[in-house]
Length: 364
Image 1 (cartoon, one colour):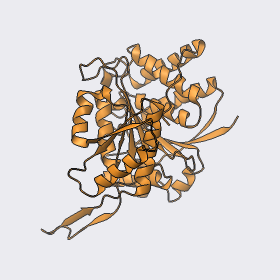
Image 2: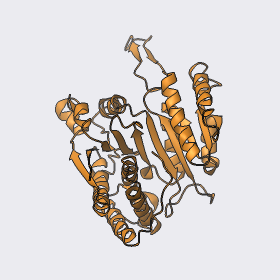
Image 3: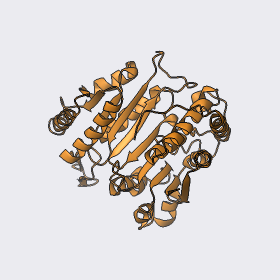
Image 4: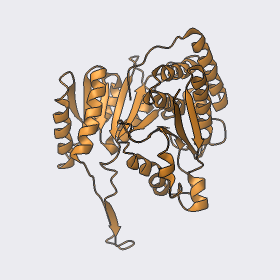
């Protein structure tokens, strides 16, 4: 049995509540499926920053590199500027480990009411370019505090960056319905977005079983609200993918449900798995946090590590707990974080007894 080392960073706020909940579920799954998962805990985040002036140690990336995966809770505190918390931890991890794919499932879950009245189920994947685009570090400010103060932020698209995210998305689409939608804004952004369109179209031609539609992001956002069930795989730049995936999870009922994977598909570096929600300091410590996004991220991590059946088992368990009406209050349920976690653990055992969990479609 191969040992797989997982770095755990609970981070801030509700991260300290949902990460232990998810770890309890992962440990139960590992026991039932005879997996050797070794968790190493790091106390990095905003509290670490307030003590040391940085979000992680100088050799933090070197420490993380010794692991097969990274399991992150949430980062952010009112006492620490967002630019410090994000650019001091998550962004360096994504870039140092070439996690150029951000994969975000958007799915209707039984037991969770959607704000949409339509009955059609939603089941789509958003593939977000994760290393460049609008979130490049190129730019700066000058004449601070003067009337002519100026800020410049450059958007950087490379042929390598666009082609590899398009290739990943097209491959996913080929394994599903064959439908791929590309988010663009080439009618208004005259250089980078036409470049994006050209490379996505060029790459998609390598997948004859895939049909690609390019859709302006404003129209796509409206489409994602009005008829989200008509999408299957969406590929988008860093900023557009960030916005669209939050919108997508909201139309299924709560951003607290949403998982994500920051992937280095080649496996040369560890990938990182985290819920989409933030640290939610307003509810931290009250037992109100929804752990589904963290647990679901754990299922994505298991799948990425090659444990398909274990991943399916875990996903089936939290879906069963939601279907039984055990959700947390943000999705209209009665449960605290601990009570919902207990429900998932019970569902894990029940499903293990019957082995009643289906094989999922590949997502990583």
